[in-house]
Length: 351
Image (cartoon, rainbow, N blue to C red; front, side):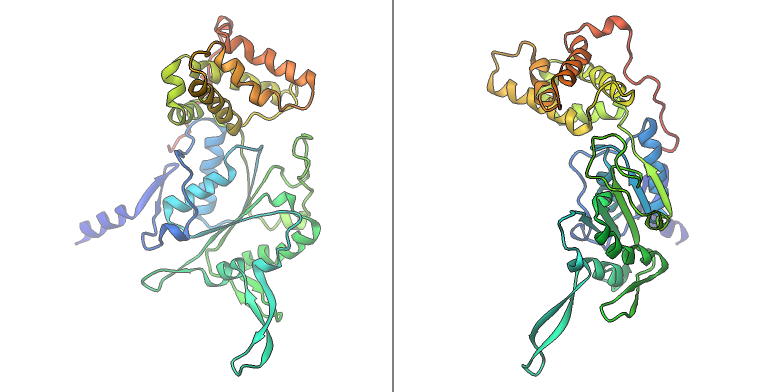
C-alpha cells in the first residue's frame, strides 16, 4: 500500500530545475495561464540560473520582482510554471492609461431584491483571485499566482492602489467598506518589469518609471533575467523554423554567432539597440517568408532578412554598425576569427 501511495504521489509531481513539485491535476487548464508554444526551460548560463532561483521562490510562495531586458521570457516562464504545475494564475498587464479600480471592486447601481433601485459593489477578477482562490471539483481551494506584467510602467496613482494588493503578502486586502478581507494563504504575487525599480537605465525602455522603495520592499525576492544562452536558444530556433534550416543548415550557426556578437556589443555600450529572442525569431521568420515568396531569389537570404530588424534601429550610424557586426557571420567570414557559440556557458546543476 505504501509503495502504491508513493507511486501515486510521484505521478502527481513534475521536475522543474531539479525540484520535484506537486501538480494540481484537479485544476483545469482553463484556470491556468497557457503554456507558450514550443516552450522549454533554459538549461545553460545566467538565465537558467535566474529561472532556477525564481522556481524556488514561487515554490515557497514568495512575492517576487522579475526584471530584465525585453524578450527574456519574464512573463513566459510564469505561464510555463502555471501550466506545468496546474497552479491557477491571473495575468494583469499594467497600462498607464488604465483605470485599475475594476480589478478590485466598483460601485454599481441597479434593482435590488425588492425591485427598488439601490447601489451595490461588484467585485473584480483580482479581488476574487486574492480572496476566493480557485475551487476544484472536490471543493478544495487553490491559491492563485497573480502576475502583474510591466509593473514599472504604473503611474504613482496606480501604484498606490496596487499597494493594497502587495499588502496581501500580510494576508489581508481592504474591501470597499474598509473591511479587511483575508487573502487565500499561498497566494503568490509576481511582478515583471524592464527595470529594477529605479527607472530606465539604458534609455531604451523610457516608459519604465521609478518605483517607491516602500513598494519594492514588499517584494520578498528579486531576480534579474538576461538573454538566453545560444545553447538553449538555438534549439528553440531550430524547432520553430525547420524550413529555413532545411534550406541552409549553416544558417543556424551564422545566426547564433551574429546574435552573440550583437548582444556583446549592446552589453558593452557599443550598439544602442535591443536584440531579444523576439528579434531572432523575427529575423528567421523574415527569411522563411522570402523563401516562400521568392524561392528563386535566395542569395544573401539572411542579409536581406536582417533588414527587417536593422531598419527599425533609431539612426543611420546605429544601422551601419549593426550591419558591420553581423555581415562577417552571415557571409561566412566570421569563422576565421575562431569565435565559438557560447562554449563558456555551462549546464546549470539541477536540470
